[in-house]
Length: 463
Image (tube, rainbow, N blue to C red; front, side, top):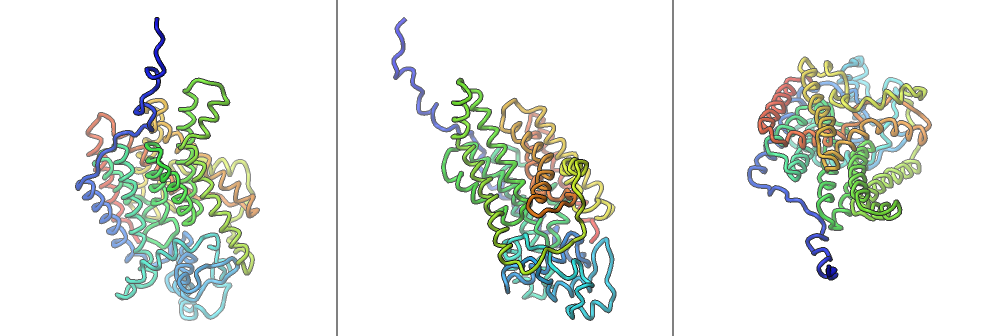
C-alpha cells in the first residue's frame, strides 16, 4: 500500500476552522415579539407602581436614599446618615408587611431623631456602586417634569430594566434555535413572575439581575460558536458591568463561566493524549480564556469597589440586626434556597396577593423541569446538557459560597435570601427553552399559554 501524501492527509481549512453552528436569522416577526415583551414589561410597572403606597421591606428605604442623593453626591458611603427625603418618605408611607409610623413622625421627619429610623438612621447600602442608582435617576428625571413623584418615577424605570432583560433573553434563545413561541412564552413568564414584581416595580438593585443573567447568556452563547477575540473582550466587559450593578449578579457570571470551562474540558478530554496535553488544550481553549477573563473582571470590580468604600467610609457599618452564628445546618439550608425558592420572590407568595401562589408554582414547574429535564434528556456532552449542569451546580453552591465569602470579608453571617439568586433565573429559563424545543410542537403554544397566564395573574397582584 502506498502511504498517503501529507497533502492528502492534512485537514482541510473547513475542518480546522472554528465550528460555527447555523443560527436563525432574526426577522420582523422577532421584532414584533420583542416589542410585545417591552409592552408587557412597561404594563407591569404601569399597573403596579400606582398601587404601591408603602415602602418595600426589601431595603427600599435605603435604596430610595441612594437614588435621591446620587446626582448630588455620587456615592453613599459607610457610616453615612440617610437623608431627609428618604426619611420623610418612609415616615409618611410606612413599610409594606410591617406597618406604619406615627403620624407625628411624618410631620417631623428630617429633624434628627435617628433612633426612630432603621439602623439608627444610618445607611446600609455602601456596598453598592452608584451605577444602578445613577442610571435609574437619570432615566426617571424626565418623568418628574410631568408631576410624577420622584420615588414613583424611579420605580417606573424598573420596567425598562425588565424590558431590556427579557428582550436579551429572547434574543439568546433565538440564537440557539429556540422557537418564537417558546421565546415569547418564557419572556412573558419572566415578566409575570414574583421576582420581577418585587424587583422591578420598586426601587431595587435586584432590578438589574434579569438583565445581568440574560446578557451573560447571550455573550457566552456567541463564544461557543466563534473564536473572534471581540467576544472574549465582550464577556469580560459584560461581567464587569453586571457585577458593578450588584455583587450577587456575579452568579450570572459564574454560571456561564462554568459552562464554558466544562465545554472546553469535555472537548479536550475527548482528544487523544495524556493529562498534560489535554490540560494544555483545555486551558488554551478560547472558551476557557473567556471564562477566566469574565470571572477575573467580575472579582476585580468588586475588590476595587470594596477598597474604595473602605477609603471613603466615615463610620462603622450599620447593625441591621440580622446577623446569626454560621452553622453547617444554616449553610446547608442556603444551598437549597435558589432552586426552586427563587420563584417565590422576595417574600412569601401570599404576601403579594391571592394569585401569588399560582404564579410561583408556574415558574417553579418551568425552571425545575427545565434544568433537571435538560440534564436528564439532552445529548451527552451537548451545550444544553453542560449549561443545565452548570446551572444546577451554581444553584446549589452559589449561596453557601457567597455566605462564606461574606464571613471572610466582613466577619459576619446572615441567612441568605433566595432572591440573591435572581440572576440565575435567565439560565434556568434558558434550559427550559432548550428542553421545549424538541419534536413536540405543541410545547410552543403551551409555553405561551403558561407565560400569558402568569403575566395576567401578575397584573392582579395587590400593591
